[in-house]
Length: 320
Length: 320
Image (cartoon, rainbow over all chains, first blue to last red; front, top):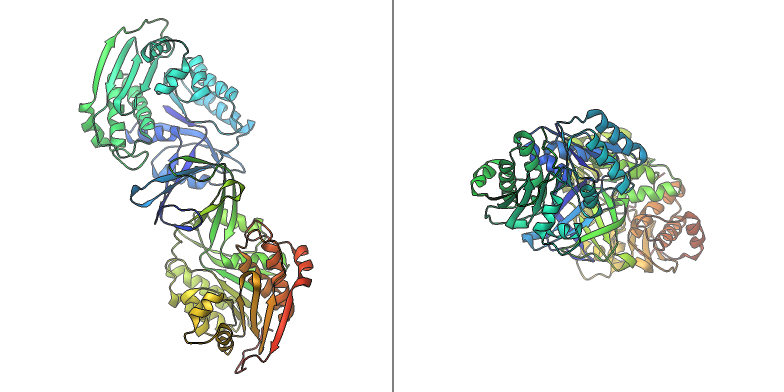
């Protein structure tokens, strides 16, 4: 089974305005749409679309729990979120001017989790995880969930022997590297921040690959670099006309992990992930992608392999 | 009993921003507060604060019904709203810059009521209303609730013999005048729109008072003109330092009707209403007022009475 963990999800409220947003006036909305915000749930969405069984876990506020789970259900995401009493899952309000003239985003403060809920999540994982499972921990942490809590969470998953994928940023990403998790997906800026010294990005990645089974370094529309099994894979994404690249990374991670979990074939996984992300950026929605479209785009993904581009030492095994 | 009817309520979501609202960036909110939006519920709030029993009625969307009734409960408003399936009560999102540098309001489309819900409201009223009751119909109409529906609603209330107060605008106000309801509260612009011709505002009001028991014409911070029982009452509001006048009219209507229902004393009612509204404008919140403060301000309300300022003909009686 694959589990995704979204510690700090959001409900995206897309507000389509009749006229461009202006202060000191009543701005009328012509339509409201809802979507799930939160990298783990986006991963689950991509996995579910590829028909790979998974369960979305995490914390969600009790006050708008029904709304939250309704959106998950509409997106066919299997879920088992823990309800946090006396608070609401934060909303991201996205105010969209007509004719794509621009938008403004307003994000609310996160919910606050207590020791009780943190313990419930750890207990669930300790009781359910098996070595053949895969876990994706993605996105930011809510209030009350400190770096020490994240360390405890990642450690519980590692103790269970499950394949641990992390899509994290800043000090959380740094922690994932220190704990030598099985998968990370840093962008170029994050790689720069991870290692000091006079190395090139490729040298830095090769160093990281000494302890991390699989690294995908995203380079936006150019594609990505992947380090796995002693090889470097340079992936060139299909050329498509981009409408909205928000959520492309989450789509990549979800479809990559789903394919890798099923096939353990790194090239097939990179191709499917690049194709799904290339489909995603052609759609306005921040999570939607078309599987049929992706299956056509897969033939346009180019992969250049450089074997033994970096030293191999004490590398961990792929998930069984 | 007093009933208030809010056909198209809203949930006010007050979003306090960390920095002034700007497009093309992530605007972080430091705090979210909720309030009820909807003139009838604001009337009920004022009545309840003055300890006059009342019941707030109307339509509210099923999807956020719990949130809606929770806010009503927090404001100690007795309520019996009809849940409209498959839709949400609209939210008014008020984005507030720090240090009161300005705000932007975004209003969502209203819910849509069906024949079934409209009939349920009419049935409830027909079964419960008694001649000694008072009903306030206030605010806009939701989608699916046409002017003909409003006419049917007002007629059912009039058939029950209850005192019918309307705080309506535009063609709905015009309809209330045509049906000769018992109370209206137009502002100066609305009076201009109600009657054609070369009359002064006072002449126009005197004409309206021929068929409407009680008219309160608001003049903002200057006070109001009231026509009742053949007299004209010129009410001068207490001078206070105004912070936020939003909701002052609803506060006036609610406290006026509550006092008038209990005492049938027009002067006492006008004084209490002016004092409550003068307290309201000194507070940031769009509904809160301080009853103790109002009871002090009541002594600063000045009323100038001009008897038989206009012809009396066929005037209706006040509520028993």
